[in-house]
Each structure stands twice: as C-alpha cells, then as structure tokens.
Image (cartoon, rainbow, N blue to C red; front, side, top):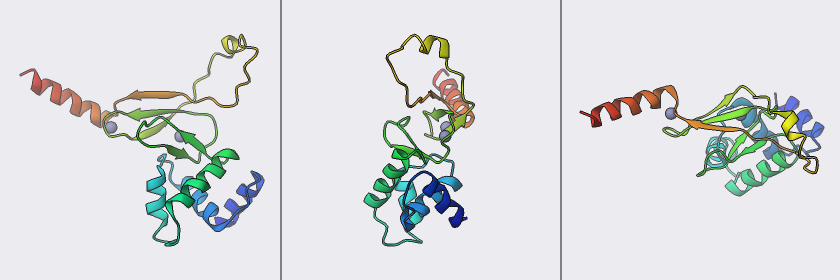
Length: 146
Ligand SMILES: [Zn+2]
Ligand SMILES: [Zn+2]
C-alpha cells in the first residue's frame, strides 16, 4: 500500500516524504472527512515526532497539488477529504458527521453565462440532520409540546 501511495503522490508532483505518505494513507483509508486534530492524534502513535503543524503543512501541500480536498462545511473545523472526484457533502447539525452525497449536476448552461469567470473548484454543501439526530430532535420536540 505505501508504495502505491508514493507513486500517487509523485503523479501529483508531490515529493513523497514519510509524513506525506502517512497523511495520504490515512485520508485514503478514512473517508470520514477528518480534521487536523483527528489525523494528528491517529498518526502520532506510529510517528511520535509528528507535530500538528507538520500535519497541517502536509495537508496544505496535498490540497495545493490536488491530492486532497479542503472542506469548510464545518464552521468550527477545517476538514480534509482524500476523495478528489467531484462530489457534494452533507453535514449533520446535530452530531457533526459529514457524509458524501451523490454529485449533483450544476447547471452548466447558466454557469456559461459568466463568461469572464474561470471556475477552478466547486463545493456543494447540504446541512441538516442525520437519521439518528432527526429522530432525537422529533422526540425532544414532542416532549416540549407535552
Ligand atoms: Zn447526526
Ligand atoms: Zn467527501
């Protein structure tokens, strides 16, 4: 596996240092849209010398070279995604979980009206409640109405 990740990073023009391979490996095995803190705490067991700043800088290199996506869906935490194929995201306002959702086809006809804009990135975010949180919300509301 690490060999394949090395090749993947090189393909993206990234020098595959040990930290970069480790962070990329984590992203490709955890499609939970982790935060810097989550990645750091999970990797620091196997790489004790890894600092949070290094994780942050590594993610920046991955994002800048198109190997990972940076998501701003969560106002409190920047999240990262190893899936760089276009897709939309859903965040639960209850528990904060982030899910991938089917990519929607943005209306290219209406976008083509903006001839002077060169679009390099599209992010589509949905917010709401996951099944579990929605049920809890309904229960709470029912209780408040008693
Ligand atoms: Zn939830
Ligand atoms: Zn995603």
